[in-house]
Length: 253
Image (cartoon, rainbow, N blue to C red; front, side, top):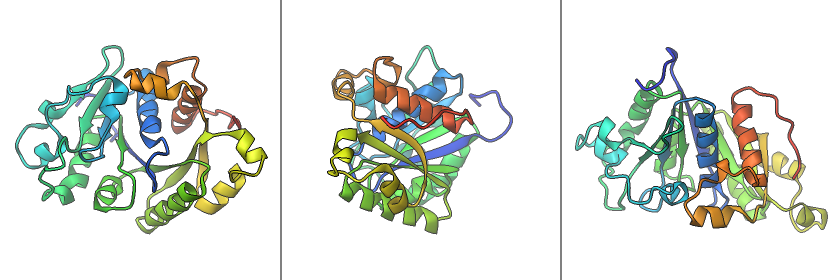
């Protein structure tokens, strides 16, 4: 066991119906913030063969084993866990490093995630976009799902469909709206926040602005969350603190 507490840890699934909405940025930022607060955190990249969390965290190529190998009995769990911060208790685990991975044991994934919850304070799962079987397995035992969308009609519609799937699975969910550009909303070129909340049907947890600093930092493998000059990072930190029960006012960017 890596954490000190006696109660079971928490599993949070970060999901989106549409790709490209910043789900991975949100997942990595929340995990980094919770770890900086002293919580023992495992960050799982659930995007099979196409995951880019390692790039964003500056650890490309460092992971040798994956969770599907653990499920198949090819390596012990401890060999697949990769600590990615010397300063904070933050670990990384990819679901599958290759598209040619053996998925026959995928139905056992919720069982292994439950085991991981007993070892960490928080298991943050960056799920692949869409509503496929992998997403269902990764969210099946989640205590909370964060539905990430942008103020685009296609993304909002897919977020609504994702919320409907989560409701059918009896999963509690919250909404995070990313890449907000107030000028577009004011001009009527993007739906406003209230319309998005009503359409998706989930309680709002965070509002994250469009931030020109995000892409260059990610391309450099520098975690956005630790950049004090980034408005997006500040809002993601607030999302993580709300998850911890702190009162952080929701601010429109």
